[in-house]
Length: 95
Image (cartoon, rainbow, N blue to C red; front, side, top):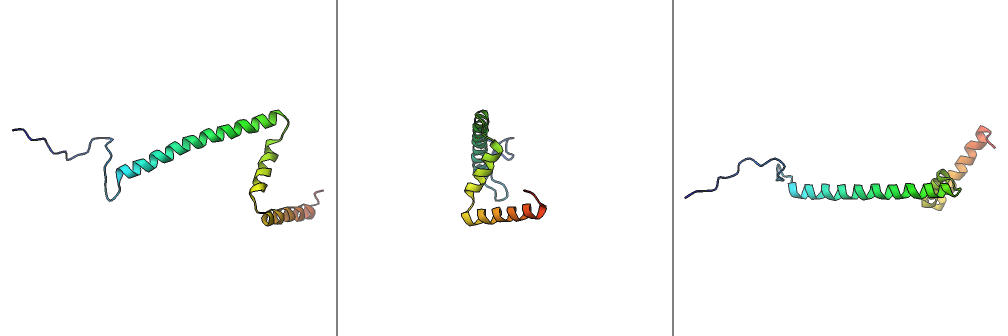
């Protein structure tokens, strides 16, 4: 009667739990992150294409990025930043 040999050493590339680290769970997290990173790259490429399209019809992408940043700010924070910018410009004799 033949007995199956017990596997003492894991095969290369085999996922296992070691030192309290759940290998399969870790692999699952890494796979999800990798998939999202790929999606993020695709979205970044799409955004780049939109900026190029806008530039092609005469809009300035740099200014569009600034407008998007300002839109995300709270009104009071935006006002403070604009006032400080004006103060600095006046101090430097710009305008």
